[in-house]
Image (tube, rainbow, N blue to C red; front, side, top):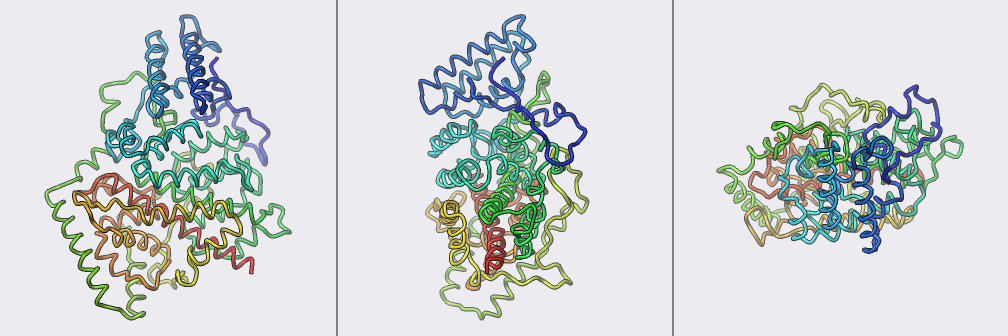
Length: 555
């Protein structure tokens, strides 16, 4: 038997489901042990070489005629080899894994076949292959990710189109989920699962269910929320408010969690850790849907053990075909030219005109109350059980910050409570390591520019980037007094606004056609850039509401 061992289950906290443990999470419960497979991630080259040689001997021995049962190749070992053969940034390991799969197949072993051709269903695989990422300077970050976590996931590969951001993202995620902190590691990954389920993000649910087990988590918790400690289950209200309507979060919600008389009491340090994990996972779910991230090759939907048929595996997914047919077009270049002209015109107007505070508020309210999502389905799709078991009150979702005919809640004015002047200092008091990392990440994404726009070079894009960020925070009710929200309508075409609001507020409704419909002449890396701006603006908005509620509780 090779070194892929299922995590053992301990007792379930709370009322256990009658479902038998062996029926649970069948595709993803196996995790690497500390043997040959995990040794492939050693930072010592000699250790990796020895592990690779041991793995090769084990695979060939297990795949020999007559080797079956406990002596045969485990399905999870084969899936591990498939993933490593496609995504490992170390060529010796990647090539050897592919060779071992071919040799096993030649000996009659049923090996898995990939169902996806790249990290994204929206972006051609050849634009995110390892050779391209190496040219962009992102390969060292992928190597570090592989050595740290044992995999280079599809999110990391897409983010590697922007290496300077990826470095900050990986440092922050590692600190949140792996390094010392108030919460145990298995709880951290389970909180990601709970948060991802709010947006029906099965990709992150699967990824962090595996990580939860690798961190020593109780397998029975993966039966659903009824099997977790009451203290963890008590996060449900906070989770759904932060995911869908963070402006409703109040100091009473914080008091309910940290009240000394509560049986499920959270310390303030534990709570702030949980809050940052929640908003990290909610915004990352938006990125997964917004970029069309494909399932991991070793997860459900990423592979099959059935013999491939001519129609079962195509070089381009249906989603990519849908995106491709909208891409480009005769008017694409003209649209870019018009956008650049509008940017130059607005720049000149800002230097010559000043609007009254009342007019600035009116322009903000116009953007905030605009309804763009009428085309989305009013009938919620049924959640698969693998996701629904982690989400209570699944019908609760985003509601326009100011529904027509209703009294709008007060706007959060950035001049009254902002990250720079208030949130950062509070985070530094409560969780200084993460506060610094978040601040660095916010600054990197805000300043990220290559001074290009589609086919044009040496373009100042700060005005466009600010419009994207401020529009996202506008739909969550955050207003900057010194920003003219009239710029949003001038710079963001309708299709882009529909896409942004969908990905930020209803990410599970994002489609390939929405992705393809905006900026038809821009590069895919520029559309990923929009998603990075969206991820961080959404995260900061929810975090500000949470920090404001915590500050009021502490007063």
